[in-house]
Length: 68
Image 1 (cartoon, rainbow, N blue to C red):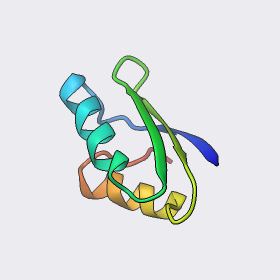
Image 2: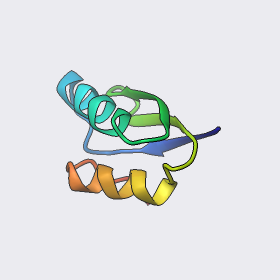
Image 3: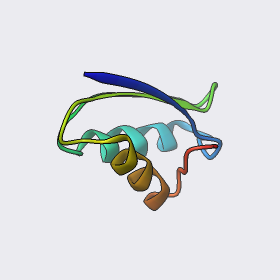
Image 4: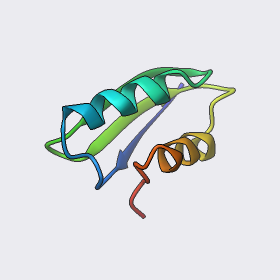
């Protein structure tokens, strides 16, 4: 299992948190998703077949791109 923390500036409310948890949580291989609107971060634990690239792509597609 891999755990990553992403800075996501577009998180502004609990709806954002719910959307991220729901959408990313549906990716095959994702074990857990914790998002926080106060810190504007998401902590995601995953294993194959999920990849960081796939997670970042999905976040961008749902309008929550990861900050560089």
